Every structure is written in structure tokens, then in C-alpha cells.
Length: 149
Image (cartoon, rainbow, N blue to C red; front, side, top):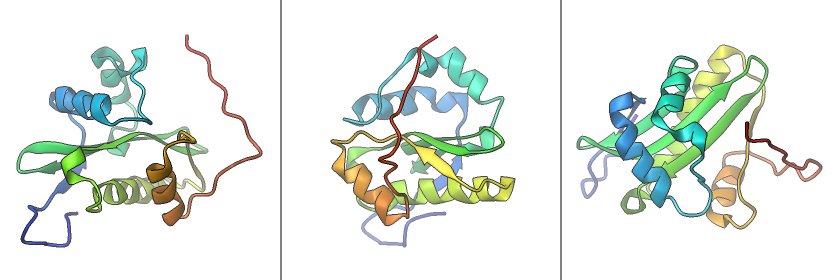
């Protein structure tokens, strides 16, 4: 999938992540601003593990040979998850994030997924607005919890 064909902007393509994309994806995550925190699970060896499971849900948007967006989807057999959505600052507000999300949603739906969850920072108003526009509801009755191993 690509953008709407605006002659001022080159089209992008959504494709599966490849380990050769790691340096560009890491830069996107590091410069994404609020919302993406780099953790030990984002090191190359851990990302390589992710590529052995649900590789079809780990997608990048590419334009003119450059990675301009990324999303990491996950499927545990019951729920889908969205992680680490990031788009290059020069390509934001053109539909790249929306396209990445929709691609992962379609792939999760094809696996039989009935519900997708994600975590978004309360202060990240742009992301919250985007997710609401795409039909995601805030789950105010739940408190996120986690544990680093």
C-alpha cells in the first residue's frame, strides 16, 4: 500500500521488517519522541527472536529506499498487540502511521484475532487522537502493569 499518489510526495510501500532494517528502525524509535521507550528487548538479538515469531506483523514503511515508519504487531493466539509505532518526523501527518496500523489489523484479523490492545502514554495526545479515529477506546478500568526480567 502507498500514499494517495500526491505528486509532491513519493509513495511509500509497507513491507515486513528485515534485520537489515534494524539501524533505521532503531533511529526511528530513538527519535520518535514520547511514546517509544527503548528497552533491553529492543536489542538486535531480541529483535531477531521476534522475527522468528509473528514476522508478518512486524512492518516497515519504506520510501525511496528509506525506512520512514515502523510498527511491531504481536499475536498470542488470543489478543493482538501493537508496539513501537514510529514515523519519521518529515513523513508524519500523511497517513503512514494509519497505513501501518491498518496493515497489522488486517493481518491480525486474518489470524482470527478478535481484539487488539496497545499502550499509549497519557500525554501523547497525537497518538491517542489517531487511535481514537481508528476505533480504539481508552480502557480506563484497567491499570497497565509490567515486569522487566
